[in-house]
Length: 142
Length: 144
Image (tube, rainbow over all chains, first blue to last red; front, side, top):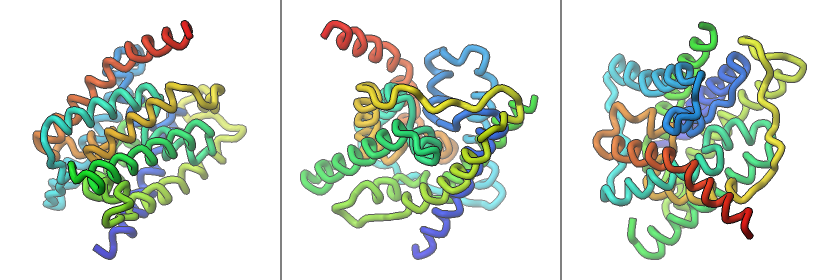
């Protein structure tokens, strides 16, 4: 679709506003992997309620919008279950080892010119591009 | 209470932005990473759109405090370490395999079907065992 980039910019601006509000209001970095990871590995301690509320908003807002406007968006996540499981494990392990993902290192890190955020983002984008170049374009596997 | 309000509204705006931008569509994310295929630049516009308000927010933090009190997070001291590099590489491979990263995987939970659930469950498991992996890596590094 020709207007994809406009929706991208608009949605991106909303994501940036979400991160700005979380920073200026709550004094926290809006990193999806950090917020969930703390709940999963038990390091959240006395911050579990605010993390849970963030997740309620993150999961719940799309529910509201798709119901109100009668949308049925698709993730188009096909592929064998084994690939999805491997992907999930790698994303979970990798983001927690690196202490951040596309929102924490990407949106929040790059915007403050954090060397860690910039290097992490270059590495995960580079690794992602190399993965598809090999597995899809060279070997036709995914 | 104020802190809880910021959490809920930030999460909701984040989810809305991910949905509108098309980042919950794994084809668009893989399309961006697939530079040798039919390249889809949408993700770059999303990142660009997000960086502007976020950079303004960081500028605004100078000499101020968060509305709930306390202090803004400091820039991490250790610039680059092995865990950051290894973790980011592993994350990038998984990101490309499924076209999902943590935010969009959660934002699409209500409409992503069994595939979405499977990915999120595996991601949670990966996050659960990450501290153990970190411990092993740190021990090996200390011995070397």
